[in-house]
Image 1 (cartoon, rainbow, N blue to C red):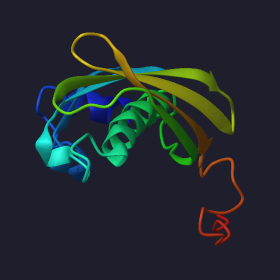
Image 2: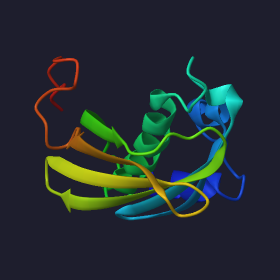
Image 3: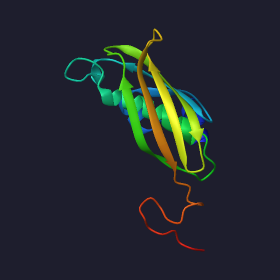
Length: 151
C-alpha cells in the first residue's frame, strides 16, 4: 500500500474511486503517517447547509487507512473494525487537511488517530480507528470464514 500511495501522488496511479468522487487528494504517506486534503464546498453539504458528517469521516478514514496500511508488510492487508469521530466545528466551505498518525501497530490490531483542520488551522474534527491485520500468511482462514487452502 505504501508503494501504491507513493504512485498516486505524482499521478502514476489512479486514486481510489471514493477520492475521485469526493475530491480529496493524498499529500503525503509514509509508514505510520498520512496527510490528505480536500476542498469542501456546497457539493458536500447536508440539508442544514454544512459539511455532511460522512464527508469528514471519509476524509479521515482515507488518511488513517493509508497511514496504517503503510506499516504493513508485503502481501498483508487490513480492514477497519471501528471508527469514531467527533465533529468539533461546522464547515461550509474550506480547504480541509486530515493528518493521521498510527498510535499502535501491533501484530493483529492497530490504533490510528486523525485530526481534520481547516485552512486556518482550526480543528474541525478528530477521528480514531481500530484496524485488524488480515495477513493471509498468519491466519487459518479468510475474512469470509473459508479455510485457507493447504499446500
